[in-house]
Length: 123
Image (cartoon, rainbow, N blue to C red):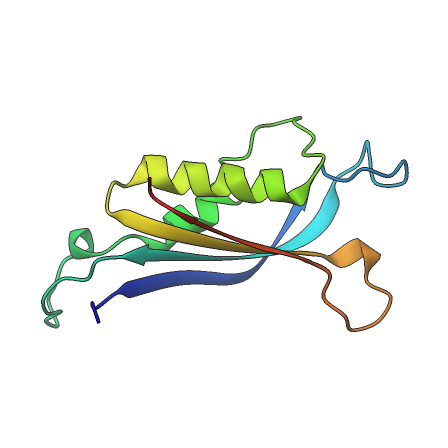
């Protein structure tokens, strides 16, 4: 089995234009997004290993927030997840896989978590 390094940003709350129902469209919805990126790890990480040997976690946060196109309505959250994956693959050739979990906060009536998880591998 190969070693792998998984960087993760969990439970990032972002308001995004998404949805198919009339009550969802036209205004941003609160989403909770978790992103995991898989990289091939270095052979070893010493205490003074520079950041360039890994990936900056803020790149993951950027892909799910500031990298989203302004004013674009994502009918499906699956399309939003795809956009996040594409952004991360374009940012760094070392990214071999991306997993994006999106929970729609506005439609929960209790403690349930309603949403999707999309995993893409570099092709």
